Image 1 (cartoon, rainbow, N blue to C red):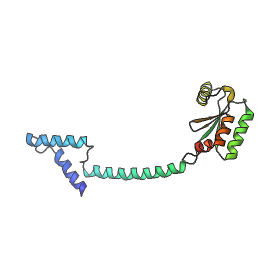
Image 2 (image 1 turned 90 degrees about the vertical axis):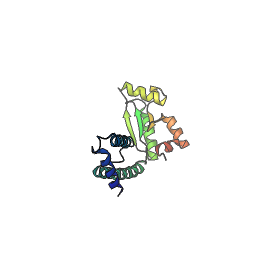
Image 3 (image 1 turned 45 degrees about the vertical axis):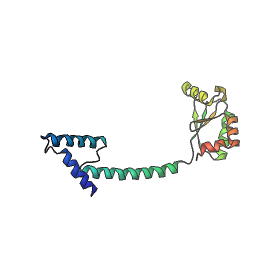
Image 4 (image 1 turned 90 degrees about the horizontal axis):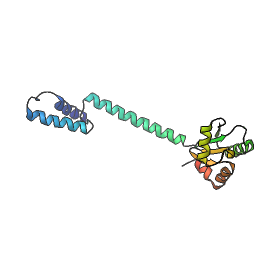
Length: 163
């Protein structure tokens, strides 16, 4: 019912009938401008039906996105940056600890990539000799000693499984 009223009012302000008279043309022009300023609440039935379908689809997608977001809140990505043959023992210890805690991780070799090495060392506030370095999402945990400290304090678990 409300869509019929909106459609009728839209047709009344957009029809050229009566535009030759200033007493009709000026209020219609003001009504058209106001309708446009307010985001066109008055429109044709087809346009209003199209908007209603779009709102329903948006609500459907939003609900699906909320369900997907809840499912994805399982764990933050854990990244282990290392340099090919440097500190292999530390890398093995890091992998053993992450595996023992049940954290999935990804190994990323920065050998030969000076830009990535610079980024990792600058962000983790460590030296190149400190590689391998662990990151949880965008948070730099640090080399193995810092990882152990974060694990003992519980900070590592809070980073990997944020609430």
